[in-house]
Image (cartoon, rainbow, N blue to C red; front, side):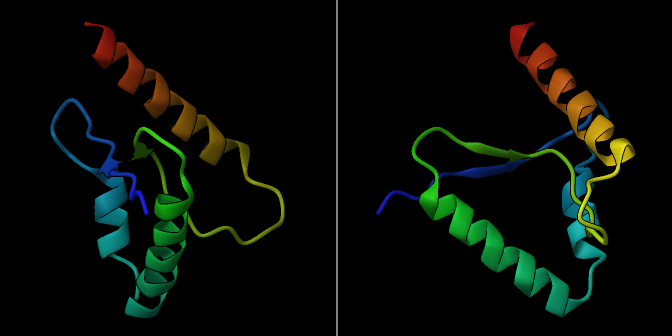
Length: 83
């Protein structure tokens, strides 16, 4: 069984917003998310996973602000890889 490595997105100043967000959650919420991440980690075919953003979804539709933040971090990540 291959386990895909998971990395936390890191800002230019060295902060890891998703790690900080996870640490602020209740233990029960962290357990649920940890189980979900483990399922993804084992089921991912190849490469690696970068956690860009995290939030608790309360409606069926993902808010545009949440999507925009993840896309912004993704662009920053790829910009950093090219330099």
